Image (cartoon, rainbow, N blue to C red; front, side, top):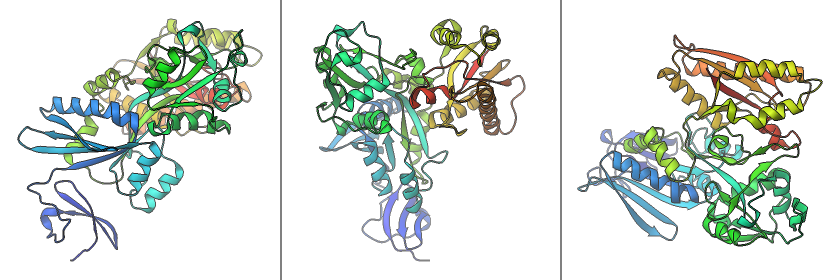
Length: 485
């Protein structure tokens, strides 16, 4: 059998070719290869090409690569290729064993490179778009949105910052943030400050990927465009430095990149405030939390690269994630005493439909238990879990299999937004909790191990995390929480 086509890649054993019959993968030892692109197995060093979000590639992935190398007694050497590309070469000191090659720009560019076969992994601060999924299927990459085609490695967030002169301010309305960066507000008085003062806005340039995420999540979502008056900076550190010394300034930076500036929480018109903290980012209670994705097509990676992807889920890797300034994927315990604001809001909002007796029943159930940061969220009116929630579910299944919850009763509590009758929302909350349980059981092979019990309850709109006056707030309220005894 003779095949002719364009060389696409080689992982040390398997050769990939683009032929008239489509993409073909061959065992190189069982084939005879002729042509200038044929690799030499004796001198070949496997390479993984990564393209996409700059902050992931400049900060997070290099830290993880260094940690993986150290744990496997390898040496990681950074090599500058040109102004837009660099590589990390892993070796034993005597021989090179794997090369990570980076091209950094934005999530959009990362997916474009993946679809053009110019990257093996896309680095993204957002989910794959429907058009990108369709294009991926067309070019033979499989469904990039399917389970197993992506991996969340950490969580980041978009955080508003102001100068220390405004440190008494706790939060800003998310709607005001959109109006300000959309050019509809140009004075601090319009943001509730007593003194009129010009508002100066700061954001990174488009090259970092941060600005792209902010525009999509805050402006495009509200049919706005970024104001031309926004001052642009090359990196988050420059934004923080400029904001810290200017009482007129309002900026956007990633989580923990505040410098000497003061971070703000995000508020709704009803008074609920979500602060950018470890637990609120893990639970997705903070509206501008951003899971950080790796997307890869339906193809083989070099064995050591596959080992690296698996290692990133381990405890040592997640420790490196937190040390690098991001939020890891580990589970946090949140006792009832640390949830006073939302319980107080539930009591204050109790009325004709959500009766005090229902809140008392819920409180009696939760008071002796602890909430875990493992949370499951859904799209508008849907029961399909979002990507971070799918990651949480598979991790929960692994923890149950590994005995982390032996002897415990787990509670899956379903909540909704406040739109519609309270009785219907209680049923919807219960249905969502049941859906999570069904998906969990499927991940466990159809049954729970002996000694673990999982119960479901639906409390509907009884315990809001956000205000229902915006889609952001309603989205936060649609969730299933996990509580343990």
